[in-house]
Length: 578
Image (cartoon, rainbow, N blue to C red):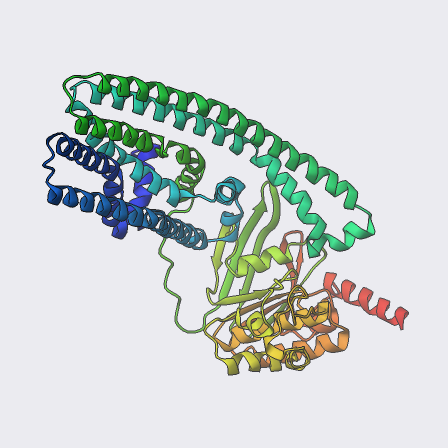
C-alpha cells in the first residue's frame, strides 16, 4: 500500500470534493498574490513619470491618467476579490468536510453488525473526528486542504516580487525571497507548536465538558440534585477546564513574544533592502518605488499562513479517516430477498470479549409467528434480539436473518421531535395516513391529540409549546413505530420489554393490537410478564446460553420445567399481592 505524505493526503481530500472549484480558487489566489507586486510596479512607473514630468515640464498627462486608472483598477479589483477569497475558500472547505462526513457515515452504516461499530478501534477514530480541537479552531480537514492548496500558490507571488527586485540588482530578489521563506517557515513552525499544545489540552477540556454537562443534562439532573452533587461536579469541571485554558493562554503568550522576533527580522531585511535601493546609483526613482513595493508584497505574502499550522490541527483527523477506511472498507449490501422466508439460527455462539453469552442457540422463526423469549436477567435475551436484527454477528454458527427488521428495545430513543416525526422516523417514506393509523393501532393517537399542539407538539419540555410524556406514554410512541414498520413491510418485529411501563391491562391490550397489525411479520417478544407471554404462539426459554425449552404455554406447563417454575412463582406473587 502506498503511504501518502500529509501534504498529499490533504490535497487528495481537495480533489475528493473541491475539484469543481479548484480553477476558481487558483485564479483568484494567483491574482491576489501577484496584485501587490503589480500595484508596486504601477506605483513605481507612476512616480517615475511624475518625476520626469516635473523635471522636463512636459509630463504626458494621458499616460499618467492611464497609469492612475490601471492602479485604481488593480486596487478595486484586489479588494473585491479579496472579499470573495475567504467565502470561496470556506465553501470549498465545507464541501470537503461534508463529503468526508458522508463517506464516514456510509462506511460505518455499511459495517455488517453493531459490534463492528461498537469496536474500540472504530469508536476511537470517530472520537478523533469529533475532537473539540477542530471545534476550538473552527477548522477541519476541508480548511486544511484548501490552506495547503493556497500555500502551494504563494511561490507565484514571491517569484513576481523577486523579479522586480532583481531588475535593479540581480541578487537582491533571490536574497530577499530566501529571507522571506525562512521567516515564514519559522512563523509556521511556531504555530505548529502552539497547536500541539492546544491538542494536548483536549483530554482535560473534554473531561471538563463532560463534568459540566452533568450539571444541566436532563438525564442526570434528578440524581445531581437528590445527592447534592452540584458543588462536587462544578469543582471537577472548573479544575479541568481551567487547566486546559491556562496551558493555552501560556502558549499563546509565548507565541506572541516569538512573533515579535519574526517582525524584527523582517524589519531588518526590509531596512537593508531599502537602504541598498536608495543608495544605488543605477536605479531611477520609479524603479526604487517599485522595489520598495515589491519588498512590502513579499512581507504580506510570506506572513500569510503557509498551511503548515492548519496541517497540525487537521492531521489527526486525516489519520483517523485513513484508519477508518481500513477498518470499514466499502461494501455493497446484498439485495433483499423477495417474499417471506424463515429466520434461522443454528448452533449460534456469541461472546462479549471472553465472556460467552450464547452457546449453541438453535431457533427457527416462521412468517407471521409470535414467539416469546423468557429467561432470567443476563440470560442473553437482548443479545439474541440484536442477533436477529443483524446488529451483531455470531462468533460461530449459522445465522439466516431478515434484513427488513425493526426492533423496539428497552432503552428506545426519545427524540426531541414532534409527535408525528417521533413515529414517522421508523419509516420516513410513510404517508400521513399510515403514521396516524399506526398510532391508532397501539392506542397512542388519543394521547397525541391531547397534547398542546397535537401531532405538531415537540416531545420535550425544552421547547416552547413542547411537552414531555410519562414512561408508559413514551412506550406507546415506540410501539407505534413498530406498527408503522409492519405496515411498511417489515418482516420481523423484535419487541424487547416493550410494555414494561404499562399496567397489566394496557399491556394485554397493546399486545393484542400488535398481533393484529403485524401482518406477515414474525414477532419476537421479550418480556418478564407471563400474562402476556402466555399468548404467544410459541415460547422459548433461554438458559445457560442455550434454548432449553420450546413450545406453547400449555406444553411448557405440562413439561413442568423452568418455564413452569417461573410462571407459578409469578402467579403466586400476584395472588399474595391480591
